[in-house]
Image (cartoon, rainbow, N blue to C red):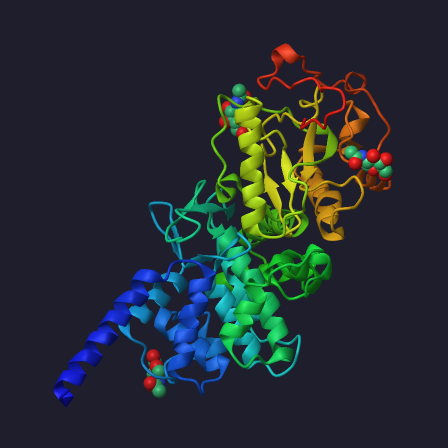
Length: 492
Ligand SMILES: *[C@@H]1O[C@H](CO)[C@@H](O)[C@H](O)[C@H]1NC(C)=O
Ligand SMILES: *[C@@H]1O[C@H](CO)[C@@H](O)[C@H](O)[C@H]1NC(C)=O
Ligand SMILES: *[C@@H]1O[C@H](CO)[C@@H](O)[C@H](O)[C@H]1NC(C)=O
């Protein structure tokens, strides 16, 4: 082959490879990590902090708030080809469009969605720091700037929009499910990861950025779930964040950031009002993201629609009923497995039992997450005769002779319960009971039933009527809760 022909072949190959990159890499974290590896391959000698700078430059992040801490990202590394640059820009540059889609976010293997920008900025700040625990600008770069902008806005919905991907295998478009808020759940997730990793990389000094991201986002849980897992993995995002950051400290940082942004004079009336609003908003933030457990919404596990019209619960409820699923009989340890279990239970309840929906209000996986069943507002079909007065929460698995992981029990016992009380969904003096206390069933299994008797709020049988609850009758039920056949494990 003559040299000209070589050049042509080579450029065609490069062209093909570029097109291929753009077409095949999706908005999955695995694909983003592949893109990071491609950047690293082009410049094998570059330190992770220089790779992060290249990503920042490719994404065109030039915020005035970034440069004082990280400097201008225009000096290091080779040029990236156009396709790779476009990919990075697409998935790192954050924005919520008028059409209600959120850009600059990726789906992680644990089923949560993160904004990449605050994650990458937190990491860069961490790698620039020389001493552990003292990372310059860490909170501003990851969370507090965005939080203070959001909380000092006059919009009513300031926090917490979550959304759904167009596809879980090849995700490209993330659409917010409710009115867009100024600070989305993906931004909070990315910000928390940025804080946690930014703080931790100062001690770890990873050789490759891609390795660090893999260890954090792609850790596969073993049999005992999170109880035996390393500390620094994305499934422990909220646990780690709570450990590193106290709520009052975070609130102080956000208030300070608002003051800086607004350059308010100390005594103005506007300042007083604004700070009061920010503190109120921060209470909501702390509740949503630090008190409550992470909940995988229905659209993420692939729920079918509710059949018919849901009946609204009248809140707050007085009971929390604990179940085990019995079938599936094994704890689920990954987003894929837990989602598949949710779908199969929903299919069983809707198709075989003829109910409107999966019976449970919430379901606890052993992957570090709670899965949304009928949720906070719709009456469930979990505890015959008591569905109007309590939530039904089920652990995936059979817990007659063994217990769920300590971590998943903590999610329900400590976090879900406190979250429900904090939001006025469960009354502060609610009673926690096992399914078998009010219905003739073996559920939630001997071992789990023994265990929950030591939990706070556990109570002996109190008939629902005695506390003034609305005791539904079978004729009022949209869900024909079946009477239990003797000797079989019933589902509700
Ligand atoms: C980087 O960009 C800044 C302004 O955008 C410019 O002043 C500076 O000269 C640039 N540095 C390099 C090495 O290109
Ligand atoms: C049920 O609650 C939803 C909001 O959660 C509300 O939009 C709807 O109107 C309520 N339905 C009834 C019948 O009260
Ligand atoms: C549950 O465990 C108890 C012992 O703890 C045992 O007697 C019972 O047979 C078990 N039930 C089932 C359904 O396996």
